[in-house]
Length: 377
Image (cartoon, rainbow, N blue to C red; front, side, top):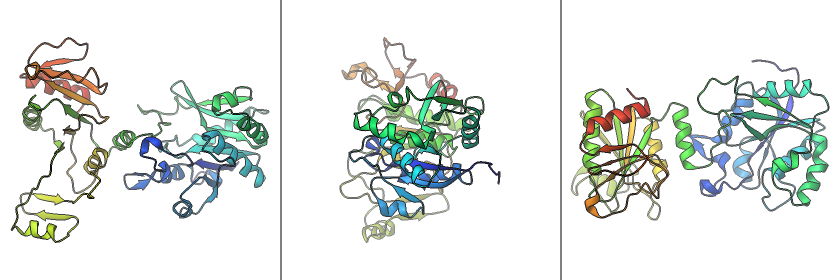
């Protein structure tokens, strides 16, 4: 393991409410069966010490990680500045001159993050903090802070300052641009703010194929198009997985069959297997349907065969990329005008739009477009 000449303390900020994640603590949300927090800890292991977790709830769950827990010194969920103040206060308490802060939702941090930040700090005496930078943006939550500015920050919070950029504006700063050390197409400081971001993270990790949804009114021909697309893709060796939403109760095994009896007796889940195929049947909670994003995660796990592409049908209101299917004779409005996730349209009539449009009956042109868009050939 690489040894560092200077070991600094680190606080992982995990005290936010995670509103776009349904109010769940993002640090504890699973990405491929691991809490997001574990990815951050893995990135900094052996490079920082000691480590503390800034939290404001769920003490019992966070205690299991075995690190010091620190709370915001000012109640009311005042944002990341309050967590940074907690970090500075803790650093002073353990008599450390500097402290690193990291968010809990950035699982792809650069491997050279810590040493680069410390090196920049040592090359710029007299500064108050070092801020990470990438893609032309500053990331002030990912920063190395001098602990003695805690009084300034405490005063700023009491005066109503909530934005990090406003607080840091008069401070002496240095920046580390990580674009040159990162060869990936994605930003290593990508943070996960929504269920869709979790899906994108699985794709970055290579565990989930690209996906899109077919959107359209009932009777527009979505299932017909989907069937023909699957046939076309299969002919050229592209494996397609599908996820279809049913708007009503449905059953896939018949009363009297062994599988039906086992399921009705309470088996959760029930798997039936034969030489030709297997099927998994899982009962949802009575009042809560499994979300699209939870269903999509199944495509990243065994025993589901890895696909080259996943096509979703029936989730037209979800925040995923969509291909619209439209038939003017239905008298229904075009969906793309209200849905920014739609990237192309197939119709049997001309559509006036800047989006890519296709003849609904020209399956080959649609297939070629999707192959090029998702680079799956």
